[in-house]
Amino acid sequence: MARLLTGRFALLTAADLSYFTAAGISIYALPLYVTGPLGESKAAAGLTFGAFAVSALLLRPLAGRLTDRVGRRPLLVGGALGAALCLALTALATDLPVIIGLRLLLGVAEAAFFVAGFAALVDISPPDRLGEALSINSLGLYLGLAAGPPLGEVLTQRSFPLAWLAAAGLCVVTGVVSAFVGETGTSGGQEGTALIHRPAIGPGIALCTAIAASGGFLAFAALRAQETGMGTTSLPLFLYGATVVVARVVFAKVPDRLPPLKLGASAMAVIATGLFLTPFSLVAGSVVLALGVTFSTPAFFAAIFATAGPHERGAASGTASAFLDIGLGGGPILLGLVANVSTSAALATAGAIAVAGCLWTVRLRH
Image 1 (cartoon, helix red, strand yellow):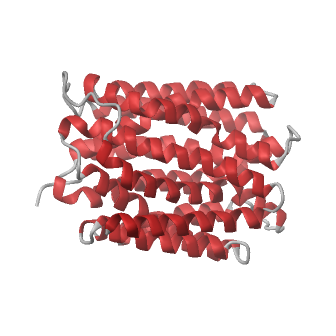
Image 2 (tube, rainbow, N blue to C red):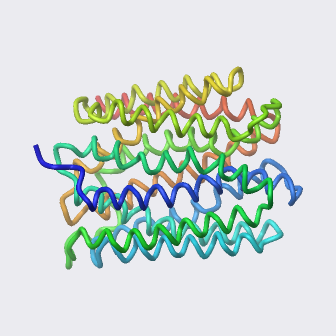
């Protein structure tokens, strides 16, 4: 069996950990800052949360093409340092339009880092262990999302600017670590220059619904915890991230043993169940939702990359992550309108989106 846990794999996972810890701080701090010191509505919080995905969506395909043509490392390093700059400037922002503008710029940086990161991961992973590689590598992402909110809670109790500067510092660390990963791909020349990898569209739509549903939870979990009088408002986000981390360690080999679309449909059903639980028990719903998310992303990305050759991986990553942006941006923005009336109704609506995704995946599989 080909070796998976190499030095490059460890460095790439460490870069993800640093980057997504910064993202976790932002996820916690942003909605509370918008609805607190800025005095804006929950709908404005949803708009601000999802704004970065608009620019990221537009640039993902271009980032995929660049990743195939110039290599992975320039976009990994450039994306991380660009994110650091945007987060540092957020510490100085005191009105909503400026913050939305910075979130749009953050989307540019995130598109470069995320697309190049996934392409690099596929480059260095044995083809018959891709699902396992996605599961283990994503530990960096979900450890970051688990650790970031509690860290964000501690930092924002001192000041919101301190939280943004800490997140910026973590992104600088990401850039340095990414530089040591080295170049994992080769220039594709005139090959692999398509902006859209068409075979990725079907499973990309399914991925979009999974991200829209879980993105709604990420955007409004802290606000819902605050409304219900929970003492530690970062607890649901911590449980979500920690559950995904533990489950992906325990079940790392499962995505390589089951058909990806069958696994994806089952995961969507579990995501829906968790979201429907959240209005009644935010803690239980967070854990069940996380169990579904454990398998959804590896399943859908495995289905997508199974259709891509070495010089198409950037395009496949760009196409798939564009759907990710539609979900991560559109979900919170749409659900923010519902949250203006009731956060519990917004979370239940996210569950309905997951049901639609489950039905789509079943149809796609057949």
